[in-house]
Image 1 (cartoon, one colour):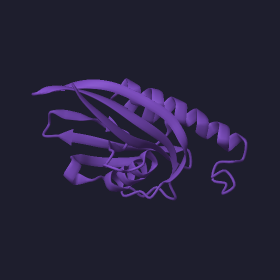
Image 2 (cartoon, one colour):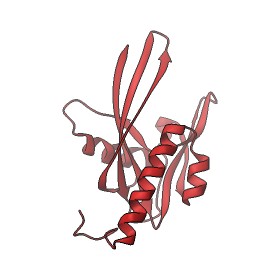
Image 3 (spheres, helix red, strand yellow):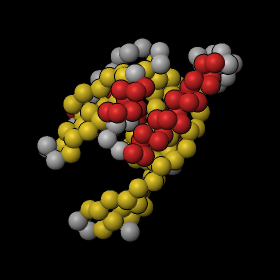
Length: 150
């Protein structure tokens, strides 16, 4: 068994969530949250910020840790068990640009209910629910976008 660790972000701007559309040689298609592999010696927060920037072109500020998801998948030589650490993040604009080298065809910001239904994987839907509730709580307390919070 191969163990892998990734980090990613639920990026929000003005209440909308950033998603990526991946099309890998027409074998894999679907909307996902930005995430990627931790490099040797890299802190999880740094990985999340770097991967969001690489995959979407968005410079997002990390607000807080949301939690982790786990799943397994098969590759020809083995089974990969993956752990993904997620962060709630804030963008400064609606700008995004999908990373074509990683087979992302589109990116954009969507309302919560749209994002929830577009996401391909159940574990990402669960993370989105948790992150969005955290966003609403911070917004209600006047802390979303406030420098004093982070």
